[in-house]
Every structure is written in structure tokens, then in C-alpha cells.
Length: 375
Image (tube, rainbow, N blue to C red):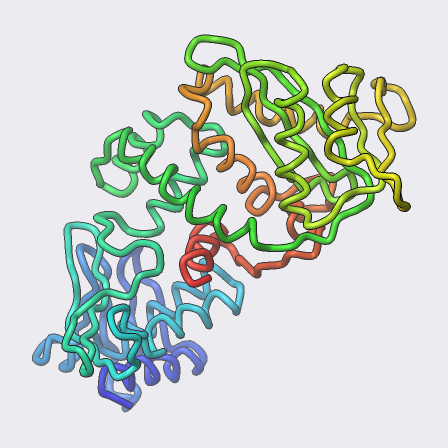
């Protein structure tokens, strides 16, 4: 094991002992010396620093700094899997993105105003690189990016997100940059989650709602699994014709990898023909179409109507969509399925209710981005 990695291991050994670390102020910590001779002060201001000889004279990230990092992660995240992930990030070898070799060594850090990330050098091809976990070449801390995504899909405007980041993180960011993050990570995440196969119930609900797009009214179609509330498909169209109704059905079957026993819709005539085109067969078992459902009927569309209320809350902040091909619609589907806990599911997400447990921990956006990049 090389020297930097041994310091991280010794940092864990400090953490394993009781009462070794004490937080004095927001960014100041005291760590007891393992030799028993006093204690060292670790600070996290502009960057990490320590008063031990290893840091003062050799200018390396010492075991006390690593111990405080692990200790802070444990306090903030609680989830053991998150701490183990942090340990893996610092210790496990990284694969060279150029030649695929694991014969690499640490090669300093890549720094900018807000981020300090370990740099590696491949001894096979000579290339230097930073491990890509979805944030390579990013100017901002990954946690800031994850925060922006979470606030956005919770209904906060881009202007308010930029103001929040500026106030609490001291980083100046433009609204177009936030939109670029949304577009970039929506594409990465959906490419990953659409490959997952949810364990669904036998009943789907389908409905449409009017939303503003480019100053005009358009239709947003949604298909949801009734049992798990997993949102299978969302589709924007200008009309409510048969061809428009078929597209969300096709997307839903593609995601579910199977057809349901029952599809529940309202009385829109386009659903009748779209259902026949996509689900009708002479073979058993056949998918049944229940239509003209009402609010008080035993079989109803109330769950998907509640989804439309959630979408309406977000659309109100946006003052409508800007274009039909917006990444926001698919981003909302990811947020609804994998990020947002649902009271009707006893605090689970629809993905967890459908058997997809990605073990995302506390920072779900950060974890799902990393998993999507490593797929």
C-alpha cells in the first residue's frame, strides 16, 4: 500500500477509537495524538489544514485530516454504506479511462476555487486524469450540483437557487449553468434508470393534463403503475389524438418490460383506439381496458390525478414549459420515482416500492449520478 493510502487507513483507526475527535467550532476540530502527547488542531476553511508535523513540514494530507473527514461524514450521513463509499473513494484503485489499466498512482490534486479532487497517473500509458464520477472538469463541488438539482425539482426557481448557492456556499453561478446541469444529468440518469426492471402491479393508470409550453397550451400524458405509483411514462404533445395517446403506452411497456392486466383511463375517445392498437390481442391473458372512471368509483384515477397536482406545483414556478423536448419532464419522472419519498408508500419511493433499491443513502441525487456514470 502506498503512503497516501496508509494515512487514510490510519485515519480510520483514529475514528475507531472513542473520544479522539472533538469539534470546537464550525470548521475547527481537535484530534488527540496517537502517541498520547497532546492534540492537533484540524481546520476546514479555504482548504483542510492541521498543526501536526506531517502537514506542516511535508504538506501532505495527514491522518488527522482523514479522520475528521470520516468523522464528519459519519455525523452528516449516519448511513454506514455512505461512509464505506467515502472510504472506497479515497482508498480503492481507480481504473485508467484511457487504457483501462489499474496500474495507477496518485499524482497530486486538481484544484479550482471551490473543488479539490485527487489526480491520478497511469503508469501504463502515462496519462494523468481525475476519476470521473459524473463531475469531471466541473468547477463546482458535486454537493452543490446535487443541491441545485434537488431544489429545482422541489419547486425552487433557478434564480432563487443561484441566490441560495451564492449566500451559503460563496459561489457565483448563472441560471443558464443550472439549466445545463439539469439537462446533462437528466440524460445520464435516465439512460441508467430506464434499464432497470421494476416489479409492478397488474393495474396501470393513464391520464393527461394541460400545461403551458412556449405560451401555448399542450398536453402532458402520464402512465403510472397503481400499486407502486411508479411513473412509467411522460409525454408532451400538441393534440389529443390516437397517435398522441399511443406514445406514452409504448414508452410504459418499454420501461415495464411487460404489459398489465388492466389499464384505467377516463372517457377520452383517443384512449379506446390507442388501447386497441397497443394492447389488444386474441390470445390469453388479455389486457382489460376500464374507462369513464369517476372520482368516487371503486376503480378510479385518483392516484394519477394526485401526481398531476405535484406536477402542477412545479409547472407553476416554471410558468410553463419552454419547449416540448424539455429535459424537465423526464427529470421530474426520475425525481418522482427515485428521489422523493411518498407518504402513501410509508416513506418509500416508488422505485423502492417496486423492488428497485439502489441504496442511495442520504444524498440521493449525488449517489444516483455516480451509479449512472458507473453503469
